[in-house]
Amino acid sequence: MGAQLRVYKRRIRSVSATKKITRAMEMIAASRIVKAQRKVAASTPYATELTRAVTAVATGSNARHPLTTEVERPTRAAVLLLTSDRGLAGGYNSNAIKSAEQLTQRLRGEGKEVATYIVGRKGVAYYQFRERPIARSWTGFTDNPEYADAKQIADPLIEAIQQETAEGGVDELHIVFTEFVSMLTQTPVDRRLLPLSLDAVSSSAVADASEGAGTEGPAQRGGVRPLYEFEPSAEGVLDALLPRYVESRVYNALLQSAASKHAATRRAMKSATDNAGELIETLSRLANAARQAEITQEISEIVGGSSALADATAGSDK
Image 1 (cartoon, rainbow, N blue to C red):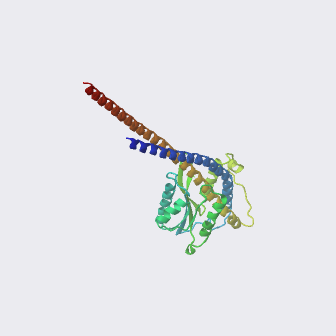
Image 2 (image 1 turned 120 degrees about the vertical axis):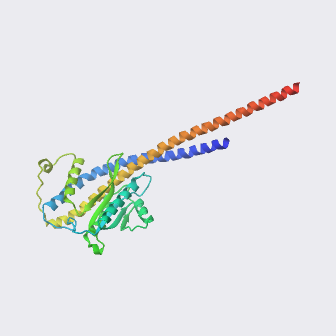
Image 3 (image 1 turned 90 degrees about the vertical axis):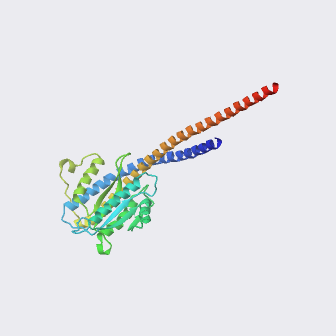
């Protein structure tokens, strides 16, 4: 019994130490969620106004641009997958990877070759372990992304879509990331960034505006779009605006993915902390039962020894 009791106590100490770690990680993730949410909110006005400007140029002119012109028969597409550098986030990474694989299968079913770009060590490790080709990867900043990181990602993607497919270019650009809906809900989504879909851009601008400042501008209230003059030309303006548009969308996706990852980590660590608490209670009951059995056995041995001694003494008196 003594050996069994020592085993229970050792396990209780081990689980208690793990519980302290998971509790600390839960609190750290909770604090990071707030910062990530603030960054998402701060990036919304810029992305909204930039989207409106791109929409105005694309709809207010007859300019043809590689980033807005649909290819008649697209043959190659790029998929940008956003994962995290660290684990302990429940199904966050696996859900994003699953969504990317579904998108890849759909594109291949349409007869398109897929080039995969990956952000985050978890996604890179997944593809490398299965010996799948990766066009390019980025790691080391998924927990706290900056705009410079988004630009670093967007530049080769824009360059790829501007190239001919025979030279390694692509006809389409898709992005897969985890959208932060709430503290309890994070949803993996896939969206096409390029070529630019004007209907999607317009609806996105309206949605971002309603989520952002919460006020209506003159164009929204009256339903009349402002008039623009393009200097030096609409093509030149698109050359300058569309890369910024892609950067802002990638940056927003990075921020949403970071917030989603922290929320998933918080939820996973809270579950681990609760499970550790329940395991400690179970082990404590088992340890108490073992201690009770040990005490009962000791009492029985004492009573038995006392009875034997009393009988021996009575026999000697006779």
